[in-house]
Structures are given as structure tokens and as C-alpha cells.
Length: 276
Image (cartoon, rainbow, N blue to C red):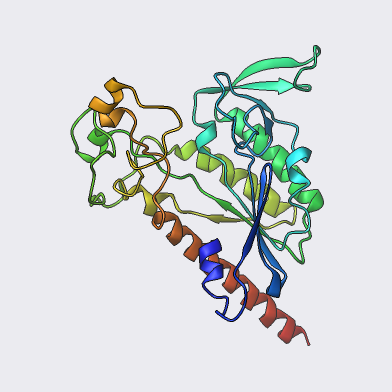
């Protein structure tokens, strides 16, 4: 998105500057008084994975009723774009009622997608109270697919996206890594928000991305830990089939987002003219 916006800035003006503040990364085009801000909150609500660097924990814990620590950074934005899926992709999640470190905290293992629904309800309650309906556009991006099981696209069993060079040709392909039940939870929460007077647009990028098994970094990525000899001998063991290459598939997501934003702005201007 930053590249998309920066490409529209004339050469005679300065390019975008960047500032990093823990979980918040800010890109600013000073001449336009415009910023694109990326905030790290992978589970939307508070969790023990909130540190943008040290978030690999053996036992993930979420406070499904606590969001203000993150949400205070979202107020007064013209456009809000949310997504949260991969970090919830497990059979159950440990939920904390109380504060981290408090002896009075209550921990419960909650099955999915119920834990996901609880977190999204907290998110929607915050939006209902804090979003300026006449100013802010809100989007929720659907789940990002993974490609871990080659047999699902008629590849060799036990393989994944490693060494793939072509998209999946089968129309309507849907891998097991994308859970329709999770998507239905998002749709339900968004519908409830709409009934309460706040519109959230779902940007559905799942199906179009499902076909792109060849578009992941695979072994061509930064390794945070030195590879073992066993891993080097078996590249599929450390191939990244979750994230995406850049440039790549996420550029299409941003083009779609741009089209929605432009369309919404045009509609608002037309409505104002009609009201004069």
C-alpha cells in the first residue's frame, strides 16, 4: 500500500518518510498531510503475542475482553483496515479473564471458533462506540490462504508450496487451511454491526489467493534461527507457505482496497452534491 501511494507522489516532492514506535509503524507524506500506519495486534485483542519482535510463545493467551491498549491507536482514522485469522488457526485458545500477571486471573481453554467470536465481539463493540460514521471507512480483510498440503491440489503427498512455479488451475479450489466457519463468524459480527448502524466492508481476498500456491516465499526468506543439517537436506521442512512474496499477491489486495476506497469517496461526493 505504501508503494502504491508513493508512486502517485510527483518526483519534485519528497517521498514518504517512516517512523517506528514499538507496535506502530508510520509512513507519512508530509506534503499531503497523509499517513499510512501499520499497527501490530495479530489477535486484535490483547495477547501474550503483542510484542512485534518477541511474539513466538509456546502457549498463546488472549484477553478477549481487552482491546483498548491497541484500539487507542485507531481513533480518528479516515480509513481502518483490519484482519486477523492465521493467529487464531488452532482447535482452541487459552482465554484470560483478568490481567497478565494477576493472581486473580481466570484461564480457560475455549474452543474455536467461539474464542474468535468473543474477540470480534469486543472489537465490534469498540467500533460501535468510537468510530465516526460520517468520516471513517472500515474494512475487514478475509482470511489469507496457506498452501501446506500438495495432495489437496493433486500434488505429491507430503509436499507443500516448495518448488511450485504455477498457480492452481482447478476452478473453485479451496484448501483445508481456510476455514469457512471462521469467515461466517466475521460475516455474522459485521452483519450485527450493520444492524446497529455501522457499516464494515468485508474485502474478500480468500478465493482469488487460494489459486496462488507458487506465490509464497518458500525457502527464499530470512531465517530467524540457523538451519540444521536435517532442514538443509529437506527444504520442505522450513518452506514458508504462509506469507507472500512482494511484489506479489498482496498487491492485488491493495488494488481492490483502493478501488473500494475510491468508489466510496466518489459516492459520498455525489451524495453531497445531490443534497445541495
